[in-house]
Length: 123
Image (cartoon, rainbow, N blue to C red; front, side, top):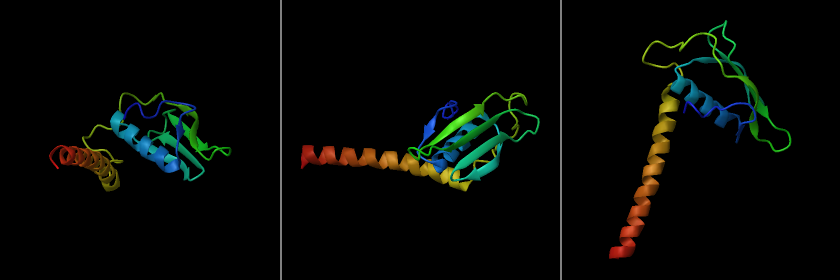
């Protein structure tokens, strides 16, 4: 997850996918961010430490309706990590539910494939 935000020009399906990716990135890198702007056409993220220059500006492309990072500064000037506790403010119930849902979906499709394969072998 620490590599899911790579830099300028990166494309996402929509603003929701960008937000999910940003949340995973923040959790993986033990950083916290604030939404300076947050709506379907534009999202601006800034570091929660006021003096830090980290920020990401992403918006929807008019031509293809995809969402992309237009400008960013991914270098934190606030120190190593700004979260010292074990928890993370962005690791909320919806984040946990999405992680569990994704893992279960992967396991269920694998189980389905195994069942189909076994059924073909043994009838």
